[in-house]
Image 1 (cartoon, rainbow over the protein chains, first blue to last red):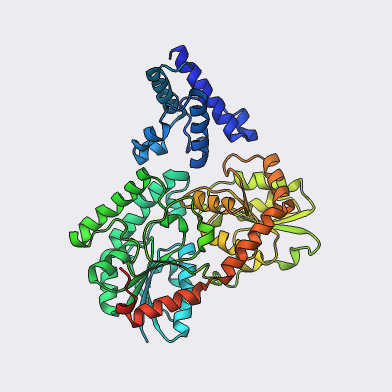
Image 2 (cartoon, each protein chain N blue to C red; image 1 turned 90 degrees about the vertical axis):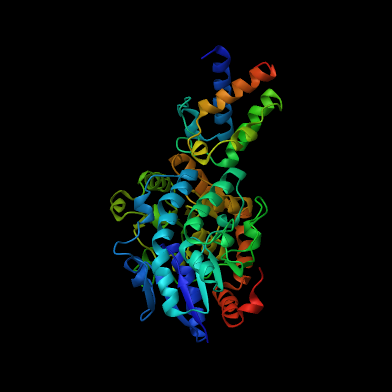
Length: 99
Length: 393
């Protein structure tokens, strides 16, 4: 993974921790393979908040909701932190926004 | 008087409201029959009930034990693919035979008993849907809604002529009776278009004659009920262990916890563990509820003005939990992650926060004012006796 990808992953993980903001998540190991549904027990409303926080960091060019709407139900169920970070890396690179 | 055929899945939360409505109809002199999985729920029907068995030799899968560990959206996928659709497919033939034999004026179909809905549509009989969870009437997201329609489409193609296919065959074009109130459903999500009547909780008695040591409850203490419902009770013990650890630090409270009986060995003095409880009677004697946000438990608790902690796990529970939180009557708890200190803080807040209790009391007035099982029975009777007048679609 390039350093930009690492930076994006770190940011995504930080936003997950700050949005959830519960005791367990502060030292819960979050990796690219960590799944939002099974591993983090994230509510859809919380996912939206995390997406908003990431958008706010980079500006509004990231269409995370649009990206999700192209996924199948099975892909949504197994969505991982790494997949979100990868999408954001690509979107950031494409738009020329600095991380 | 009319002949009315009920069909519900072998799940307690779906059977109990239907029993209350059927009882109200029977008191008015209507003749009731049941098309159900008799091996699983036949014993819970009234004595002498007329039963058409839908079991084809083997009992239907048990929802909890056939899908034990799934959660969130995954559980919804599994519910459709592994439970509701196979159940519908297998019941088509026996259901059709039951209708031809009983010749009902109206069929009352639980919204997750899709086979019953398809038979009613095919035979062109008046029918009513019973909706036991308001999550089912909401549009969740374009991806999810399209996926649900696709699930229904596959089954319709195998059974119904193309002219009868609709996006949501589970909802009757005559009447869709919802066991909730409009204000609780809220406006966060758009609703699927259907002729809804919000009748509120059916207030059935449920399981009768469950023994309970009432004298264990101490009048001077504040009390809570902790329950994850019948499907998730035996899922895993972590949640209950966390709750016991939290309650150990709150000795001024008493808690009744619906959990596997073997956990009582490790329960602190102020926690009573029972694998079954007389829930409606118990709710009259507690100050707050910690639950999975099952639709019936939520409505029964709110009817009594009880504030809640909601720890949703699967199926419709995350949606129902969000409704009660948005209505200001519940706190969120993350079922598989909650720690003893967080559980303790939430329980203290549950009993101390007067806003939660005020909002729960406001909702209780709405729920108690709703027509309930008697109102549902009235709408069904009207349709049975004058279907041409009642048809709205």
